[in-house]
View 1: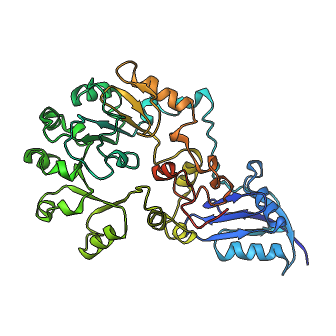
View 2: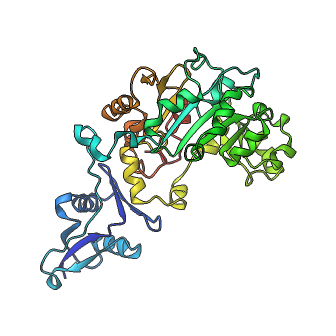
Length: 400
């Protein structure tokens, strides 16, 4: 016998809908339901309409497809039905909906100060380096690293002191200040960093290649401890006694199976950080290591906050800037210059970024093919630097 019910989903269930498919994702236990039936998709679309307040009336009988749909919801704790005769007044289910209009001029008032949008600034110090590292001019395009690339070999208008003074207006908001060291003899930088107030010093993250690291002053290495990240790009030069002695962070750059075998053989995989690097010759290796699947999504839970974040901003790039010796500012080293902190306030630069959302801070998967046609797009990790370099956004086996 057909009966009338109120149908509802739980507020922790994320809804993703395309023209011919719908997906429900339980953010508490990573369970996924996928639907291709038009009638079921239409029901989910109705549930997702804001004015329906997360509840709609339905009719169904035992053993029909809607009954089966309800059973699926119940079995995975995603939703349920209530007989209307037991609850004549329509209930309300408060479902999360993202309502941020970043094109609205009042969007800037989301914070007391627009500079609070900033989370991380990277500064490239003196570029005088005598080393000739493998892929020296490519590393910095995929992760923070020193380089002799022409992008930063400019007149030294800034030093560490003038840089800190130039960004002083936002230091309280920053989580991290990356200082890229490329000259182990730049004693002015080391002395100034050592003498900085603790509330600034604790935010400084020193990044240096191992080839320069071994020549850094001992007092500086000891003073910054875990706040020094050492990039290891040439395994043959590594002295493990130095690494085990110092309490710094060591990041091994991996390019091929040979590198992985070395780390595995020496049981370094769980001891140190590892970063994949695409060198234009290792595409198969890189894609094999960097790709992800539906199983990965289900094994690494994504909460509702992160899903809505993925729909509006790119959390890898958002809030981050790169500053160079001539004062120029970029969103990262592959992007055009967006300002100069020696010629205008940092506030003006950040305001332009926020008001023009066609930039890396707001580069979400719905803006790139084939991701824009994929029902999983906001459950996947944000677009990364490597994907931008490859111009390939299919680091997955979830084909739209």
